[in-house]
Amino acid sequence: MTHRRVATGALLLLAFTLAACNPTQKTAAPVEAPPPEVSIVTVKEQPIPFMRELPGRVAPMRIAEVRARVAGLVVKRTFQQGSQVKEGDILYKIDPMLFQVELDSAEAALARTEAALVLARQQAERLETLLSRQTASQAQYDAASAAQKQAEAEVAGAKANRDRARLNLGYTDVRAPISGRIGRALVTEGALVEQGGASNLATIQQLDPIYVDITQSVGELNKLRRDLASGELASIAPDTASVRVVMDDGSLYPEPGRLLFSDVTADPSTGQVTLRAVLPNPSNELFPGMYVRARINQGIDSDAIAVPQQAVHRSTDGRAEVWIVGEGDKVMLQPVEVGPVVDGLWVIREGLKPGDRVVTEGFQKIVAGTRVAPMPFQTAAVTPGATGAGTPAAPEPAPAAVSKAQ
Image (tube, rainbow, N blue to C red; front, side, top):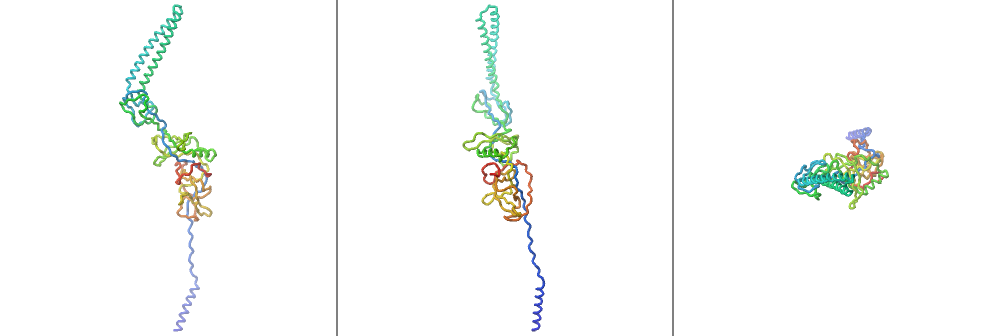
């Protein structure tokens, strides 16, 4: 038994020895994951229009109140309420009978004075002949000549009375003073109107083209002028379509307009001035008194910096920041100061410089210090000025020219 146990132990020892002599299988090292891909844009200076979105009210191009020029009874209304009328169209008819009688009386008086003139002229001519033959005195001729001139003056006065009566008769047809869209009728048949009365009969407004009166603070306007004078902003061409209107539902009015002028007087209660723009209104989508937002291109910042909207994020305290790819393709957060949105791009006032690489897609894959594989950002082509400027998500900064110097 003893020998058998010794042999068994020897065999086990030999087995362990042989196992120790065999090379052990090593555990494979973990494979390092590839860096996540992110889309980036390389920041560069580019010309960006300086857009401002301001409140405005729609106003008619021309407005005229239809009033009676003679007193009388309205016998007929000839226009359709809310329709388009042309200058000179008859809108109301006032009873003309009294004015026709006055015209007939004035014509009769004119005929009487013309007959008297014929007699006075013949008498003057006859006395002139007798005076040349020395058969009439100078006093007689002078009296006849004066009578002729008096008769001529009476004829002129009678003609003026006839013309006045004819005008008054014509004024019984109340006509449109301008072309445009007429509103509701303010009087009906049977109403008695007075000459030059305080109440008007209807109102006509010219709506195509149409004005938009925009308000801007004096400080903004002065800052804009200083930036234009110093070269921070470049002026736009005078005939450039520089105004786009945003409707109350947020849609963009299809017709662009242009800025006409800015008022020279500030409202003392608000410290604002009025800027007037003119826009085509062929479909009558804009109505007088309507509230709109106007996007105004007031200049061009030739060396502005802008990034796509999705590249800008907000921190927990509301500050704007972007992810940038630094040395070694590692990402880090960069605080920035943003301006308005122009053509889908945030204008960056501070925080970025030309050459910075800003992450636009792939944020869910990264944290600060992550090494990434940057890829060029693919974006759809945007026509400059097609969408205008939006209002920043943060409280709007003090209005000024969009430039890095700010």
